[in-house]
Structures are given as structure tokens and as C-alpha cells.
Image (cartoon, rainbow, N blue to C red; front, side, top):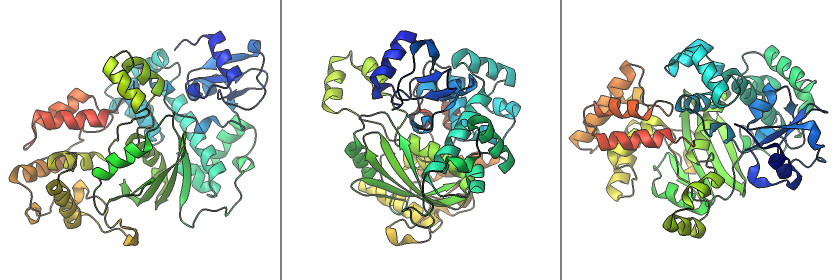
Length: 432
């Protein structure tokens, strides 16, 4: 992406919040890169260069500013204008996929070769996949250091480092100091025991009441609970079970209180929360693309900041769609509640209204679906998906091409093309 040097410099002089997360400045005299809202005195124009993402700034040799904290800026700049393969790869990287596999295996999962994927990344976003993975790891680690009191060894594994030695080396190289030297938050400060609290940024505006209303109308009893200003649910991510509590702090940040047994699932959990609340939505791009239509323009003016709720889990989305998707009809909601109680694993500490984890395909595989009052087609659809998904590597993920997902689902018993399209498009959610 080509950035206009003079225009970007004016953005930084104005400290324009609208461009936070869209452009970063690297200061050659200090070796630091910053957000547009950094409170530090602006450097001279001849001493700066501009980048479309934090990863590109780090790839150019700059280290994150300790004052404006680029790791907590809204995260969407790298997606724009990218190929579909690069978009899917970036979403996998955000969830920590490249921390657990080789470059070859990662590329194979996307259906391309490692050299081709690197070439696509350099062409579309200016840096190789590893640069984005390294940026994600160091940003998450720095956020955990400064916003939590987790021991450093837990920070290392939660952010995707395979060893404490690699974690220490990365911080020494990036900041010239050990990780512990960056800790600002006093140990034991105001977070209940067993709760991890983080803040996630987004680009305002955000119609939070509308988001809460839509989530409330589709909430699964026992799995989700909606308060006036907050969303709670049980979670099970690759065996890491727990619960989340998400509330808006201000017009730019959400606070996430997380209770989970395995912190190595944290990158995936954060990625799912960002998708659920549509935090990658870009208001400037939406206004540009939709503002030219008279009807849509008036609606956007009347309801600024509307966002589309995502889904937490692929299997949950599929069951929702089979039972009626929106679950707004009393019969659909009752059926989902019955399904969860019959097959969901009970959740501990259920006094807060969260009584079960949503059933996994593994728990459904040998279950007697007839104990729930669903139709024969609904039962056949659930059984056929579970059998196919557990028998092979299912392409039904947020990272698969839409056409591939539609074709795969349409071939299953109990699914029609309309259902397959609904599932595939809701899973994709590409902001590009």
C-alpha cells in the first residue's frame, strides 16, 4: 500500500483519531514507531517514514513506542486491498496458527506453497507472514505485561512463544531490556483472583445498544447471558474451558474479563471476541462505500456505528442455522435450550446463569438425538455434519474460501444451498 508522505504527516500533526490503526510512523532518529495519537512531540518530517501496519514498521527495524502503545490500536489496516488468500492467512495468524506449525504446513492449510504465500504477502502487504506473526506475539505479550499481573512464564506461553528463552530474546532485541522492565501495572491491582482482564480497541463509532439487543434476541440460554452493558458466555476453545465477560469501556475500547484454564488458547479467544463484536469494522471505508446511496446514507446518519454480530464457533453457527438461525421464534429458542441441556457439558460455578458449555461435535457423535424434539431433517443435518467433520479435515472454517464451504455443506444430508450460503458468508466476515 502506497502512503502519501505529506498527508500522513498532517495526520500526525493533528493527532487525528480517525486514522488510529490505519497508519504508523517510524522515527529514524529514535528507532521507534508510533500511532497517530501519540502524545510525544512530533518529529521533523524529514526524519519519519509511514507504514500501513505495525508489522511493516517492525519489519523495517523500528520498535514499538512505550507511550502510545501500538499493540492496543485498532487492528484492520493490513486487511485492505489484500488477496483472499492473504486475508485468510492474516486471520489465521491473528489466532496464533503460525506459532504451532511450520511455514510449509501453514501455506498448505491455505492451499498454496510456502514460497507463493510469501510472495503474495510481500506483494499485497509488504512483509512476509513471519513478520506479522512476530508482531502479533510481541504486541500481545507487551499488552499482557502491562495490563495483567501474570507471571512472565505464563505471558510467554499465552502470547505464543515456544519457550521463555525465545520470549526474553525477542524483548531484548525489540526493546533493549527484559520483559519485566516493561511492567507498569502494580501486582495485585483490582482484578479478582483467576480473572484475566484485557482491553480491545476498535474504531468508533460503535452502536453498542444495538449490538447488545441483537445478541440478546439470539442468546442461547445457559451458554450466553446479556446484561444491559455487557455480554457473558461460557467458552471451550480446543479444550480450554472457561467464561468471558465483555463490556464497553468507552467509545474506543472493550474490556474483556476472562476466566480460562489454558492460557495458550488466548490468541484464538481474542480473535473470536473481535469477530463476535465486529471490531475490525472500518467506519471510514463503510462511509465511503455506502454513503453514495441515498437510502443507505440516511440510515447510516440516523444509526451510526451499526455492526454485524459474528458467531463464536463453527458448530454453534451450524446448529443455530439448522434450528432457525436467529432463534427469535420461541420454538427455536426452546429447542436450542433443550439441545444444550441434553448434550452440553455442565459448567462449574453456574450461579451466574451460565450453566453449560455449548455441545461439541465429539459429544454429539454417539448421542441419541431423538431425546430432543427436533425434526427428522434437523437431526439428519446435525448427524451428517458431525460424522463428516470428525471423519475428515472439514473445510467449514472462517478461513476457507466461501465457494468451497458452500459446496461441501450442500453435499451433506439435511442441508440445502440456502443454508450453506448463510453459514459460509457468516463465517467468512472478511473486512477487505
